[in-house]
Image 1 (cartoon, rainbow, N blue to C red):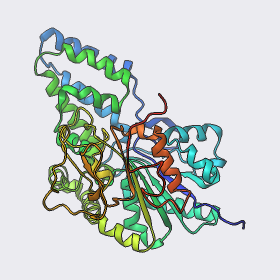
Image 2 (cartoon, rainbow, N blue to C red; image 1 turned 135 degrees about the horizontal axis):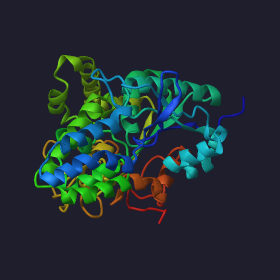
Image 3 (tube, rainbow, N blue to C red; image 1 turned 90 degrees about the vertical axis):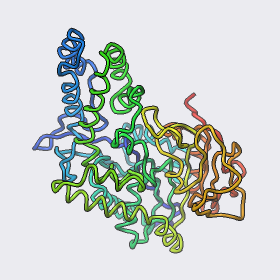
Image 4 (cartoon, one colour; image 1 turned 90 degrees about the horizontal axis):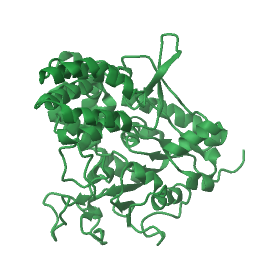
Amino acid sequence: MSEIRYTPCVILPGIGQSKVELTDKNGEKIKMAWPLDVDGEEVMNKLKAPLMKMMLFRKDAGFSDKVASVVREIADPIACEADGRMKNPLRVVSYPLSLAECTADEKRYIYKMVPLQMLSERIGEENLYFFAYNSFGDTYETARQLSDFIDNVKLKTGSDKVNLVPVSLGGALSTAYFELFRHKHDVKRVMYFVAALGGSHLIADIMEKNLKLENALSMIEMLTNKKTAESLGGLLKMMPEGVFEKTAEKALDALNAAVLGNSLSMWGIIPPERYPALRDMYLSDKAHGVLREKADRFYEFRRNFPSVVRELENEGVEFFAVCGYGLQLLAVAGSDKMSSDGIIHISSTTLGALSAPLGETLSEFPEEGRVCNNTQHHHLSPDKTVDASYGLWPERTWYFASQRHDDTAYNDKALGIAARVLSDDSFTDIYSDAEFPQFGEQQDNRK
C-alpha cells in the first residue's frame, strides 16, 4: 500500500444538509422527507375555505385548527413516535464513497452544502468523505452508523485515524460518537465548524414557546421556503385580532408534538441548563419513557463533555473551532440578548466563551463562578464583547464578528482555517499563521 500522506476527513453535516426520502413499504421513493417538500400554492388552497370563513365572520371559525392540521401534514414525513422512532419509512441519500469517486451531481451537491474546495485541493478528494444522516433520528443509532462509516473509510484509505468536521447539528452527533466509541481511538483532529456543542437556545425557545410571534415569518421561511412565507405574510395582516396568536400557538403545538418533542436528535441540542424543565414539560408520561431514558443519558454526558474532551486531549486528540458572534438569534426567538451567529449562541459553539449581552461590552472583571481556561494571554475581542479565555479551547478557536451561521461556509478565512487544520499538523493554534488571527470580520464570498 502506498504511503499515507494525509489523514482522511469525514464531514458531519448540519440539519439541512442531508437529503432524506420518504418511501413506501417496498422501498420506493414517494417524495423528499427532508428538506421538507412544501408546495406553497397547495398550502394556500387548503387554507382558502377556512380563511374565507374566518374573514367573513371576523373570528377564528376553525381556521387555527386547520392551520395546525396542515402543519402536522407538512411535518408528517419527519414525524417521530413517542418512543423516538421515526413514524414513516425513510431512506437517507448517502455517499459511502470519497468525493473523488462521487458522480458529478453528488460532488456538486456536497460542495454546495460544505464548500471545502480549499481542503480538497490540499488533501485530495480521495481523502474527503460526507456522512449523510437523518437529522431527526435517534442520535445513538446515527452514531453507530457513523462508527461503521469511519471503519469503512479507514479500510479504504489504510489510515488508522480520521479527522472529523462537525458542522452545526453535526457537533451534537460527534458528542454522541465520543460517548459510544471514544475507546476506538480513531480520531486525530476535530474541526468544529459553527457546531452546536452546547445546544441551541433557538430550539429551546420554540419548544418552550418563548417566541416573538410578530416575527414568526422568519421561522416559517426557515422551515418551508421564502415563497410560502411571503404568501402567509399577506394573510397574517388581514387576520382578526387574536386569531394569529391562537393560530401560532396551535401550529407550534403541532410541530412540537410531531417532531421536536419526540426526536432524540432535537433533545440533544437543548442547552443543558434548560433541559430539565423542558423534559418535565414533554417527557413525563409513560409513552415517552424510552425516549426520556435516552435523552437523560445524553444530557448527562453533554454536561460532562468538557471533562471528556480533556481526557481525549490527553490521549492525543486535538480540537479546534470556528464560530460567529455578535448577532441576535433568529428574530422569532425570545432569547434575544445573547451573542450568536443567528442560530447558535457563542457559548455553545465554543463550549464556554464569555460574551456580553447584545449592545453591551464586557466589564473589567469576569463573571463570578465562571472558569477561565487561559490566564496567560489576552483573548478579548477588539469590540470587547467576547472573552475567548472562557471557551474550552482559548487558543484553538477563531471568532468572526457579525458572521451569520449559514454564511460561515462562504467565509474564505474560516474555510482557510479549516483547510489548514485538516491538512497541516504544524498548524496548531491561533498563533500558527498571522493570516488567521483569532478575531476576524464576517465575509460572504458569494457577494
